Length: 93
Image (tube, rainbow, N blue to C red; front, side, top):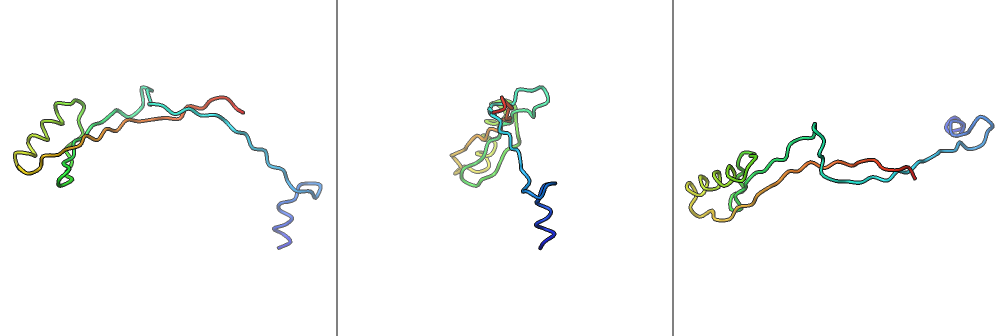
């Protein structure tokens, strides 16, 4: 126990001080060249099946049409959009 107490004491026997710095950050879409690309997927609301990720609206609707042909009662779909975001460091406070 005494060793644990000594480890928290400074060179003169007093308590060590910690310094904390705070910084502002702003979050927004990641537009860097190395950012992961946006992706879109369609999902059947009836069964939860997901289509493959795609880059354009046409590809998603094509999957939904094909899924509907095989499942005539599956009439509701949702689009899932993945858009990368990134925090940008700001000024130190």
